[in-house]
Length: 266
Image 1 (cartoon, rainbow, N blue to C red):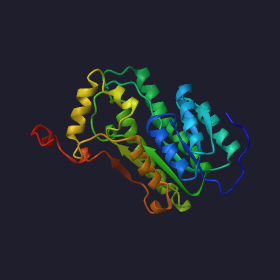
Image 2: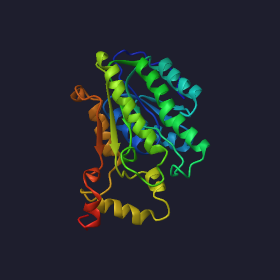
Image 3: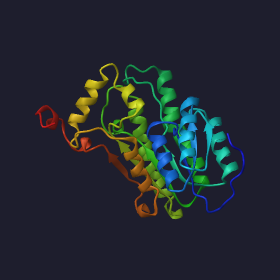
Image 4: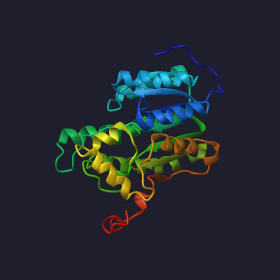
């Protein structure tokens, strides 16, 4: 990890958690193109983190890499301390990282629930508190949620409710930080083509993916870069009057009812 301090007060700094792959990596690269210094945060995949850093090098972006387990409060403090030591501030915080055990409510053991809610709800608040303290006025907070916060998705009996709690937390932050002109919003992706999304589909991945595409009014799955474009807009000056909102980016699938699917309209 690079240690040389970056002291320019004009430097825009963004932290995207879980930014070594998938949606988080795409957001990091989008913000880097917009002139942000960025942090490659990851939990355990050293190879993915190195690849993400190499992609940022190719963009000519100022960046550094931090490993931290967001299920651990000490690691959260270490992550934000590292950013404080290197940059001294944040301008955008994107809470993207999440992990869970893919089980229904009645299948999950207490240890699964405890880990899930600690990382995705309780420690999210701890991270947001640290981020808010580092954000400069007119900063931006974006929370990456998912459709499982609104609808029952098989295997998401733990993460779905935790994501819903995250969205509600963001609404409260929008009110509490408004006097500093800091906005706080959630983005709610549908079926986005990432490795983690494919794993969640289980053994019949291709069949389920095709059915999801067919049920989506736009007739396809989304790309991480499309979510990154939405986040890029929300952290831009153009979105300065948008706060406390949850914005779906799902090709329209959340707009249709089961009748759309069972009657063959899909």
